Image (cartoon, rainbow over all chains, first blue to last red; front, top):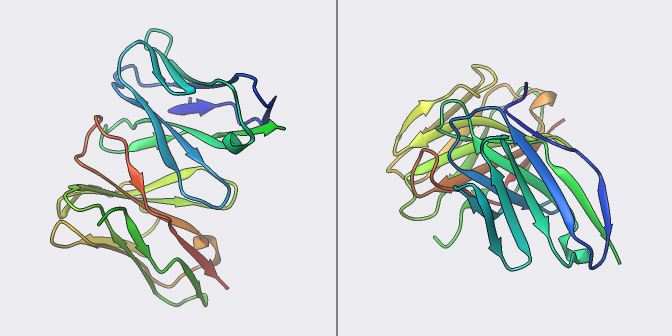
Length: 111
Length: 115
């Protein structure tokens, strides 16, 4: 089992809809979870971090964490074409010294 | 500096040559990371520095790859005798500390092409 798994997509949603991105991880000891956005040809940009079970909201973004089920998700409300990017989930690796990244979910928001 | 700075932004080299990639992290960030991203692929961890020491070199793909960090600041990733499979974007990131607590800030990367 991979340490971090994401649906590769591509995921397409119409403008204004809610985009839901999911990630599962294998290490039950993980304590912190991150979502990055990567536009084509650019480097990843940190958009959300979450450490506790439940929801964390930041503007149009909501991160959801369920440690018992070992998944973390990212919801994007009122999706905009500018949200079109690859979204990467990141979890500390087994050594807890570096982040392990999922392969990313490519999101396209259609105008 | 205000962000993570990497140089050069692009590098084209002939197979068999050595290359040096540079990373200047955010001032005060003690942790520094190197990742590699091949075209259309995910991020592959290479090496982690805490201060000037490298507690985790597990991701370096071969002994042709080495890295150092001096003055708890600038880091250099060196690839010797480059091969075509080394072609990728090399990303550097820094964070205020190691461990699980912090997300990373990435530089804009160095795109390496081996011809």
